[in-house]
Amino acid sequence: MMTLSVFGKLKDTIEDLLKDKKALLRILSVILILLVAVILRIHDENKADITIETAETENETEYSEENNAQPAVFFVDIGGAVAKPGVYQVSKDTRLFEVIDMAGGLTEDADADHVNRASFVEDGQKIIIPVKGSDGTIDAETESEISSASDTGLININTATADELKTLSGIGDVMAERIIAYRSEKTFKNKEDLMSVEGIGNKTYEKIKDNITI
Picture 1 (cartoon, rainbow, N blue to C red):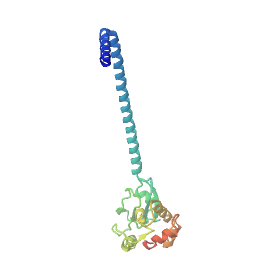
Picture 2: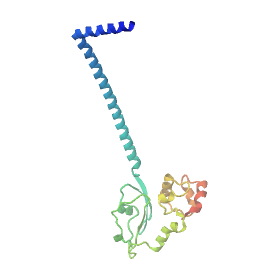
Picture 3: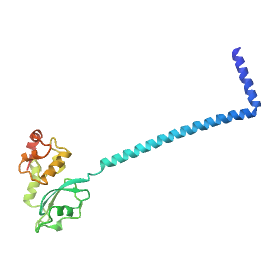
Picture 4: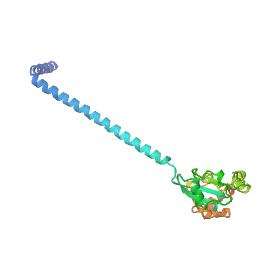
């Protein structure tokens, strides 16, 4: 009986509202406003999510580009027919003629016709300037020095590239650069001189002494 009474009252209320068109319009207006507010709120939340995702994606892209960027400074080893053979620190996009200038220029017997002095140099590159009469090839003594590491399986600490040095136990990017920087000023006279490089002590030397040569 109570349920019927409630439905009866609800029916009477609806009938009264239908009769009172103004009241009905007010209720419908309120409902419409609430619906519009809910829709706008959902739209704003979705827009905020898209903005955050876009910002995160841009940050990831910038981070990836920074990590993949080439080092601004690296080292090259130049020898052969130059006044001052050795290892030189250069910057990105350095060309061969600039390295030759650093090495004191070409000697009188240099064969410049077989050298592309406009080419870019690369990190850890070994450059040999040939002498005249060699047809652009490396003289036997120099070739022997360069190939000694591969022939004996030993790493020549005076001529090895950074990548070759990093094959040694305990030698990473930083230590390889320190070795190259050290030998650009002083040639290793014996294997023990390697311990003069900052960060290379007795323990590290003992691990690699049988794998290196000069």
